[in-house]
Picture 1 (cartoon, rainbow, N blue to C red):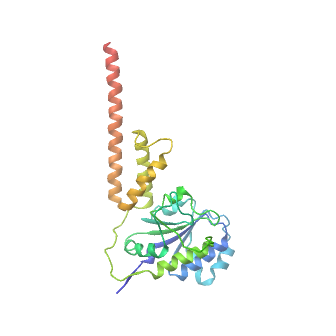
Picture 2 (picture 1 turned 180 degrees about the horizontal axis):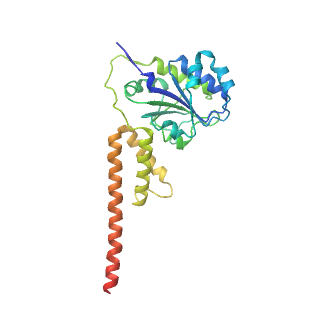
Picture 3 (picture 1 turned 90 degrees about the vertical axis):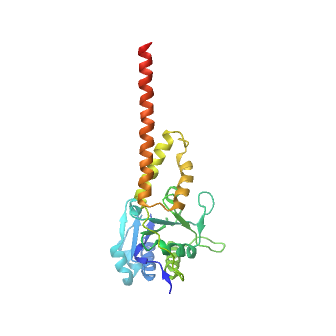
Length: 257
């Protein structure tokens, strides 16, 4: 017996797509591979007739249900695991997997978690800030010419998700913290770590990125995020109390003199 990805827990997100034809072709690819949910973020030309023309009648239900968001953060806020696609490697794009390897990794995660597969704009892909929202990255191996059409990339990734199986089913991954919970935690962490001079205030994201990578490997649950945020609040309270006590002691000594 084999175990496959629960495609009901998978959604494809197109971030700032430029051409409606690519949205329609992506909807067709998604539908062909058994995925029901497609979302777009800030589409440049959301022309419905051209989207439906490329989607064809068979994928019309995917277009009907397609959600549109004003920001990638909004599109991801209820997702527990986010996979970003990248054509470029190196720099902050470390630990990048092939689509087939990622698909096998997602099998146990998909049982209890919402998964988002994110594709960037046709001309430039996902930015570094957008990649920081992702738990993992994938790269589609190609020959000398590495530029794939957006809909082609969607088809390759969705095909790998569709065919991935696990001959010896492992333990499912419990419900993880969603993107909104993680982003709120990282914002709180950055604020407190800057104020206690643990990270450089001139480039906090660079230093925080190492912490993101560490915590992403742990795969935090909602309760664990709540614990970290509680620690931040306690550190903040203690730092403020010490500062206020120091100010009060200084005033007392000044009055005594």
